[in-house]
Length: 141
Image (tube, one colour):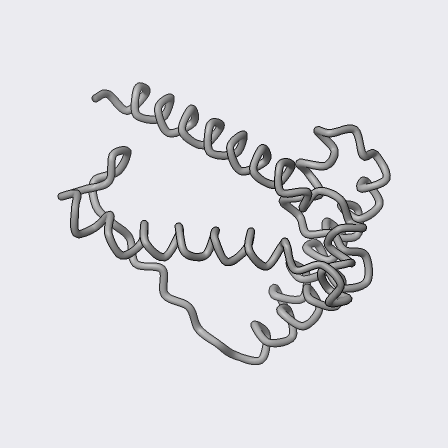
């Protein structure tokens, strides 16, 4: 496959994956901050099933795909995804969790919520973008 064809296939796969992700978020009602906040207040545990199911699917794919396929469909090899826990990771996770807990909005569901016409999520996305900008500036120091 040519480089242009491969880039087109990767772009199409990314688009289809994003649409499926947004559809899943919408069907599971994760795009509604009220539902997320009910979950965080331990009043509604439906989202725990959604998130648990998603974690199981990803875990299976990460474990089984390299064993069943010689190489990924749109790349030449499987990549390792190392993670390093340090102070910055801990602070970032805490800030993300605090923001999520205060407004019930996560970046993916916020973008999907815009697609459903929930324009008030623009405020949350502006805060997310501002936080990412500040983190980028801080990382350069």
